[in-house]
Amino acid sequence: MNGVLVGFVLVSVLLPIVVGEARDVAPWIAERLVLWGARRLRSKDMVDRYSEEWLADLEQVPGKVVQLFFACGVFFMAVPRLRWQFRRSEARRLGILTLAKEWYSDEVNAVVRLDVPEPEALETRTIVVTADKLDQIVSTTTIPPHPANQTSQRHIEVQSLFGVSPAVLERTSASCFRFVMKLPRVLRRGDRHTYGTVTRIPNGQWMQPHYCFVPRHRQERLTVRVRFHPDRQPLHVWKLTAWEGDVTDDHVHAWEPLILDASGEVYADFHDLLPGCRYGVRWQLDG
Amino acid sequence: MESLPRVSGAVLDVLEALLRPDDELYGLKIARNAGRKTGSVYPILARLEEAGWVTSTWEREDRGTRGPRRRLYQLNPEGLSAARTLLAQRRNATGQYVGGQSRTSRPSPTLGFLSSRRAAQ
Image: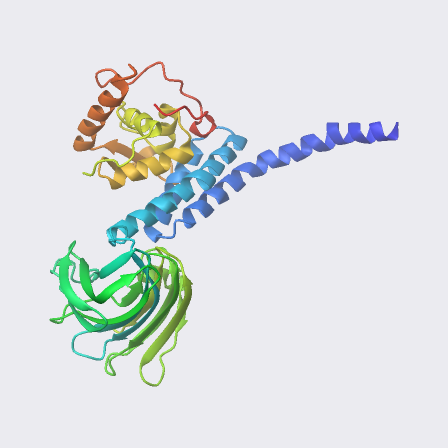
């Protein structure tokens, strides 16, 4: 008898209270869910845009519980798809998806020299062959325009240091370059090969204050060393790890600060790199 | 303007919703008109925008409310033409789309997210 009474009290008194509370808190949860989802888009422009757009649309949804359904739809369906789309379009913009999937980089070591008249990146790369045969390597480099100099035509020079012979350097867009290198011998599936190149930005062209690497496949290791000019030391330097958004100063709070050593250099080491994400170093010079 | 690499039934429904004579088409309304879940409509709108079919703008701030602005979507002239052609090609086969006019018999649920997913056309 007592059990029945307790059950009656629970159902008739407590359940409506709990349901009422849940209904009252649903709009708050929906708003948080929508904003949290928008923040997962990473790029500041996208976060700002979709936060406002989804909040505005949420206001149009009638009913507190239904608002929660709307927010769940955004969070669990729209956000993952948008993240995938943005990552894919970014990869396409960088030319990553157009490259032949015949090899992948296992380890890349880069030295960026800003202490010379023409900034240069010396890269040593160890690749693993996944095709049956491989006699050339196609690689891409993007030199994004500097905000203060958007319109000028950009040029780069690429030289082979060892392990490859440069064959063709072609521009695929205003800021993207495709570089075809001949291997010294035909490589077979599973072969490892190490080669070195130097990429220069000639003629005093403005460059974005960062060096970023975007792996095509899962990559074991990347090291980046940046050597600054003694007369142009940076105010701040940051390390970008698995970054998916834009590389602008709007995101500095999310990056790990780096300290210059006595040689005017910074060093960053990355492991288990994820495809499509950015890894590298960003700096801010005085003026 | 780029061609769409993959055109699903949901994409056709969204295009059809965008063809409606309405200058205040925001994501939720498009989802309702298309009878699709909002969770799938926002990514489709992003794809259409990236491909250059659709342009989006913030609504005017003098709507009388202070708060988040709605994002309004519109087919641009090229997108309009391409959408009509695509719909005519795909829908004519099933008799569901005639001469650039939206269907009036389409169920329009209160909320796109709650609507059941229809089979691809």
